[in-house]
Image (cartoon, rainbow, N blue to C red; front, top):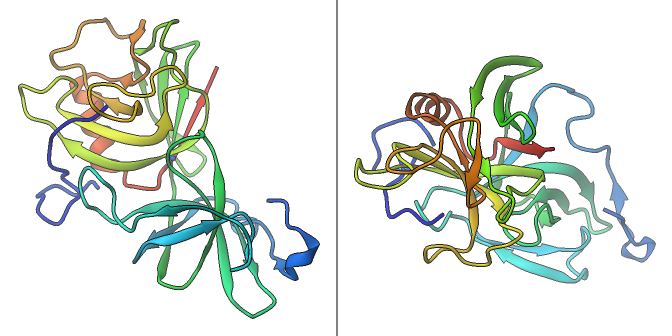
Length: 244
């Protein structure tokens, strides 16, 4: 998924849119997993600048990768789900975050400095067997939508992901009127249409395949009305779970 469009969640857009084991030698104190004290809602962190991601909450831990402060398609701030918190021996605060890209579902630690913490009550759940998306607000299912999911040769990957950014697509673009790019990547396609094989929730404009079928390249398609509703309610960092 690599649509050339502007995000309604960007500064230029007009609409409000916007998916560890700790070595003892690190000398860190692991705090209770994020969200344990408040069971409803997903804690999030907005990156105010790029961060090096490490295997453990220490500047001496192995560097995994660098995560940019802004998303590549729209330029909006990167928002990541928080999985845990820790304080290192030198007094620095760290957060464990879910990361975008390959391998699917990977995670790491970033310093809490130069970030802003928020929380979302929204979450998305795709069930592949029933080809249905359920939208939750807190513990309550507020919407259920029929979908198109990946065909057997290009299946929709399963796992724990989050929404990275949202885009409004032109009437001529395939998959309109909106696309929500997720942190998931195809398990089959390393590249698709010039992009990194990124999995998105998007519309059905200018695409074949009926709702309730398995006929996509791995993305999750919704009716134009459904994806418009989702795009107007779901922002970056919102958890997305895809199950059998």
